[in-house]
Length: 292
Image (cartoon, rainbow, N blue to C red; front, side, top):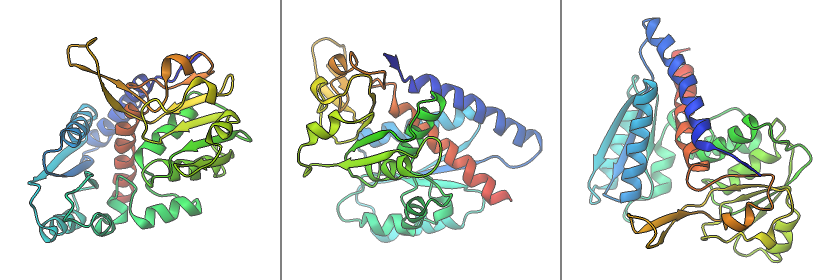
């Protein structure tokens, strides 16, 4: 069994981006700029945005955060989106989710200019993904594909089972895996909460991508011998074994499943680490499109 070390891959990719940004600055060009809109005080959202800021600084990308209280009006939020859309020095930005219930998430996402949509959630970018047209791809699926590519994992002709049909992970990664390319060219089955015989379907997977949002849902009896297992889930579980009072687990029961795998991602240190670095890669892609 080989661990798919997302943390180490992210470090390598950051070094590549850092060198690229340094060359840009040495040529007296303006640096890439990534912004984020943060609404409210959700701890997970604050942690994610802080990680994005820190990672941006590490590679030399300018980072800005626009913070609002949870009571911000939809109108004010949309005005900020419009401001960032029209700021020529901002190459891309994210609106951190979730948003308060009084704000229409779809309206906000659709208001982001597709060329600055670093999260890749805009309908135009999702449409490009469906059609196989180059565009900004959601960060977590992009990170998974980068991981498969850099570990030289064969996907062509393989049966890939994706657990979870969200627009953030499951649906886009299923599209990417089925698309022509390397990685890609897989035969994909997309499963969800209403899928019957889900255990039997998982048992046929050469590559299993778990993004179903259920703690340790995938057990050893669901996994084929020598399968590749990608765990997207992240859950806090109370424990007396750590100072924090909790441990982090994924959608896969790692201890038992890892004994059957050829490759598996750890949680933490796997897909999560690749998500942030994929945002940086999207920022660089958007930057290059803007300065052409």
